[in-house]
Every structure is written in C-alpha cells, then in structure tokens.
Length: 119
Image (cartoon, rainbow, N blue to C red):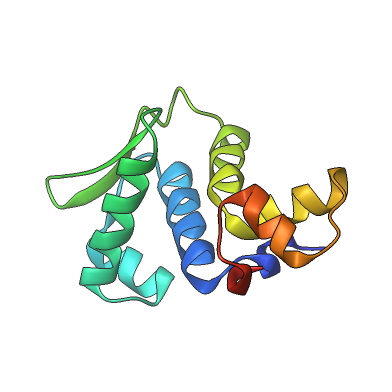
C-alpha cells in the first residue's frame, strides 16, 4: 500500500519536492521543478517557505538559478520522510487510531488539536 495516497495533494507535492531535491544533489532548475510538480512558481515558493519554516535540519535554497537541499548530505531520505510524516495531519490521525482508543471523532480531534471537520 502506498501511504502517499493518504496525503493531501499539497502534502504529496511538498514530499515530492523534498525527494527531487534529495535525489538531484547537483540542484534542480525552476523549470524542472515546476514541470515535475505540476505547479506554478508562486506555489513552489510557498512550499519552499513552508518547509523551511517547519524545521531546521535542512533548508531549501536557490543559488545560481538552481534549487538545493542544504544539509541534505547530512539528512537521510528516511529522516526526510519521518519529518514529513510528523507534520502530516493524515498520518497523525492514523497513528492515533492505531495506538489510542476514542469514543468519537470529537475526542480524536481534541487530542490532535484539530477541528472535527478535519478528521
């Protein structure tokens, strides 16, 4: 089972961005990323900003027209996935359902500090 299907479209795109930058250590052009992610430049920039603000272990930066994953050589692909899954509401819900018991959706939402409409 591919757990990516549980992610929202935004989260799948952001995960793919991290994978592309991790795989292409020599950098990725804007055009390559836009085509690979099927998104616009404002969306790419917003994803970059969001991922950079969410953690400090790695940083997406642009130098000489190419995007790089700074500190990517010190971070394994498994660690990137782990970081991403911890940020994903969908995986937090799944984890809670596997390890905890709740009487109703409202209790689950309260435990995760999210709106019941997101569960």
